[in-house]
Image 1 (cartoon, helix red, strand yellow):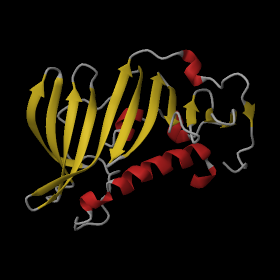
Image 2 (cartoon, rainbow, N blue to C red):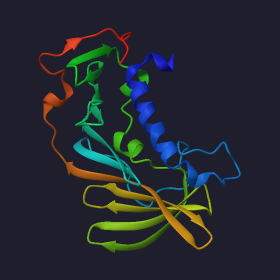
Image 3 (cartoon, rainbow, N blue to C red):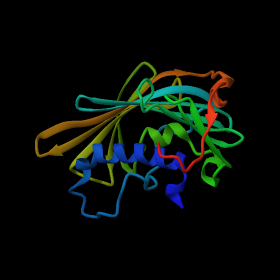
Image 4 (cartoon, rainbow, N blue to C red):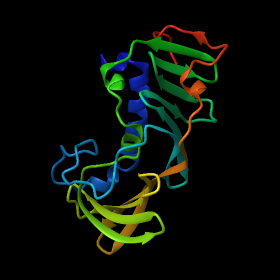
Length: 219
C-alpha cells in the first residue's frame, strides 16, 4: 500500500506542499484532470537530464515562507534531505536498500528498494517541478543562463519563467505567475542553489550511532 512506505510519505507530503502552494495558478483551467504531474506535451528546448554525480539545494519560496530540500546523486545512489536544519529534518537514502533517516532522534528505518526508487528516477527534474508545459519562448541570455517563458497546459491565466544554466545543464530558477487581465503576480519560485559535481560517499550511508527502528513507529 502506498502509505505504508515512509519514504513515499515524505516525498508525497513535500510534493503536495508544492502543489497547494501554487494551486491558484490553474484554478481556471477548464479540464480539472490536468495536473502538474502529466508528461510534457512539447519537447523541452533545453536538457532535463541531471548529471550522474552531483549535489545541490532546492529552495521553494511562497511569499515569506521558504522550504529547502537537499539532493545528492552518485550513479544509482540517491539522497533527499527534507527541511534540513530544522527539528523535522529527515532524509531518504537509496543505496543497497531504502533508508529513512530521522536526524533529530538519530534513528532510521530500512526496507528493500521499491521498484520506483530502484529504477533511478531523476531527482532534480522531479523536484524542480517540470510541469506539463505546452509552449516555450526564449526571452534572452545572460552568460550561460537562458531565460524562457512557458505556458502550463496552454493556460492563459498563468505562465512560468524558467532560467536554464547551460554550464550545469539544469534549470536554476523557475518563477510561477498568475495572470488576471493586466495583473501579473508572482505566486512562488523554485531555485537550485550550491550545485556541485562531487558528493561524499558517506552521504549514502547510515551515520554511525543511529539506531534502527520499526517502520510501524509513529514519526
